[in-house]
Image 1 (tube, rainbow, N blue to C red):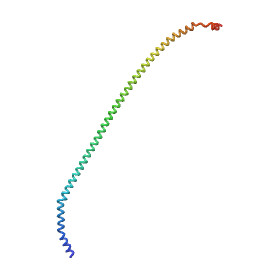
Image 2 (image 1 turned 90 degrees about the vertical axis):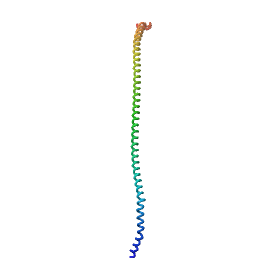
Image 3 (image 1 turned 30 degrees about the horizontal axis):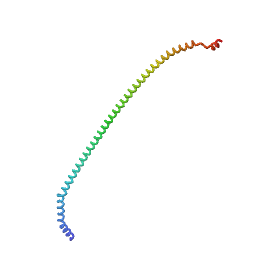
Image 4 (image 1 turned 180 degrees about the horizontal axis):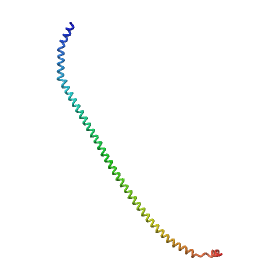
Length: 157
């Protein structure tokens, strides 16, 4: 029984300490933990808001980056198309110059062949005339030529 009495006295002595602990608990809860919890919730909300804003900015930046690359790709394609068109124009111009030069050289060759053909025809005509004249002269020389006396006697015998 004495033990119960000691335990009862111990509890009676502990009651003011328990009351004081509960008082401090409610005081700290009201004046420290609630404002601290409120600040932590605000901080969490701000952090979450900042995180959402950062995600939105990052998504916006990625969209701008994608749009930039698409614009860059489109500009490169346009430049390549312009270069290809310029290259084709240069090739067509070069082909036209080559074609004109070939036509001019073919015309010059044709004209030279015509001149050569006319010169050949004139030379043949002149050779034909000279052949006839030379033939007549050769025939005259042969017919007019008399055999020498020593040869003439041998032929008669």
